[in-house]
Length: 80
Image 1 (cartoon, rainbow, N blue to C red):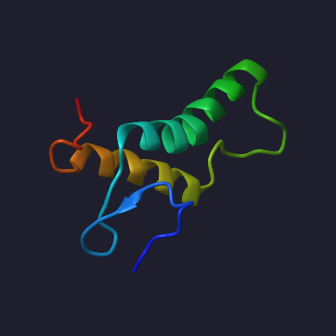
Image 2 (image 1 turned 180 degrees about the vertical axis):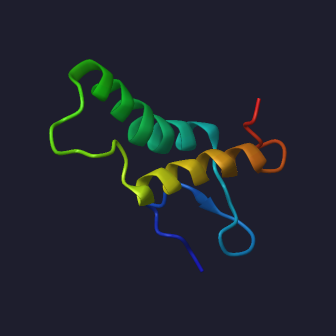
């Protein structure tokens, strides 16, 4: 099975097992979807009508990427 060329993260091993490279996980997931959103909120305030900054699925997705990046086998363990 070949992953499409637009796939951001390499699929390796059993299902749900993938290597998340530092640049991909940080730039494409954590910074873009969490840090930048938080910085925008701090700079511009919370928009009226928003009861939370992240929807539950967004939070779980970002958390999962962080967790996976910190628990990968060396040399792809980014916990330090």
